[in-house]
Image (cartoon, rainbow, N blue to C red):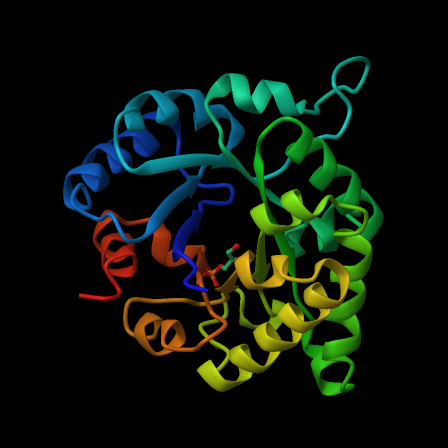
Length: 251
Ligand code: 13P
């Protein structure tokens, strides 16, 4: 089954509102003719509404970098799913390794957030990935399997097909050390197999992105791999030129 590629920028904690708007303004002109790739930008919470407004009518989707699972109430500092929808999000990144590492995210909280996002019509981009120590200890597959089985459990088949998984080996994030296309493909194929054991055919529809030092000069080789359906990109998504090159990896 042909899966439509998705190129997603995770801006992390970068860009003020004017900086974010300026980049989307520039980017939307550069990629206006792209139809065969879905494009997503995930800015900080404060820039979401302004970017959604700037991106209106373009082929750029806007997403958040996190979500909370409760609908409202006394949860100081958190953002509810319908607030993200209200601000103009259609996607949300969940369980990024930086949130697992620094902010106590677990497979259990990931699962709650995935369900809350889906219940509100948001497409979750769920991050999985092993640390360097886990890779060296030869437990990569075990880690990925439990992140998928626990983080993505109890979804309907329909929802299971809709979500996006992002494989981001922690040792490749922001380090300039990309996984080789073969290393990435091996984990992507494994992730799809595990997902197939959980949700049958939905595993052929689910898009699995690779993340970790994706750059214009390595994107083509990565995207040639059968089970790599796009990229979740940090550093190289922060400039319009390099993100354009990533979106147009096929040209
Ligand atoms: P880099 O592309 O900067 O390595 O970041 C990857 C990432 O964490 C995207 O979510």
